[in-house]
Length: 173
Image 1 (tube, helix red, strand yellow):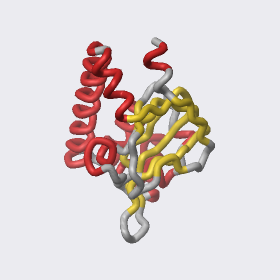
Image 2 (image 1 turned 45 degrees about the horizontal axis):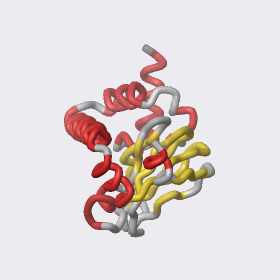
Image 3 (image 1 turned 180 degrees about the horizontal axis):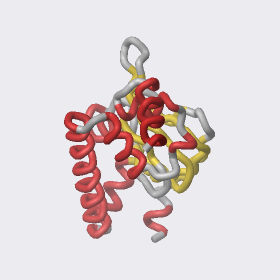
């Protein structure tokens, strides 16, 4: 166990702090002990596209940069004060080499994440905005109170006005 824990570094992040900035190099992934983070991309016009929220017991990083380009395409912002463990890719590889069961464990987690991502892509293409909002509430229970409306709207691919309309419609029913 010491072999693993000595490769982890504890990180404390405050609300509104940006942990990872777009176009930086990245060599870590993060395990969230508590708090809430958001991954988002900002386009050339300054519009934000929220990709993911991370809550307790979730892993987060800019995986495009981490596994591929080495330069991030996303920002990771702290939404609620958070405590994380970070681990370098090279250290994680050492753990995989030494303890194959951990490599299998992570492979299974990545497979599940891949499936969730494909389900989300399909939902964005086929579901109504209301259906996407209801799915969001199931995936992230109790998180809504920590988020700004534009974070949720950005995640759902809708305007804040549409989000308000959907919420009013749900309350009526």
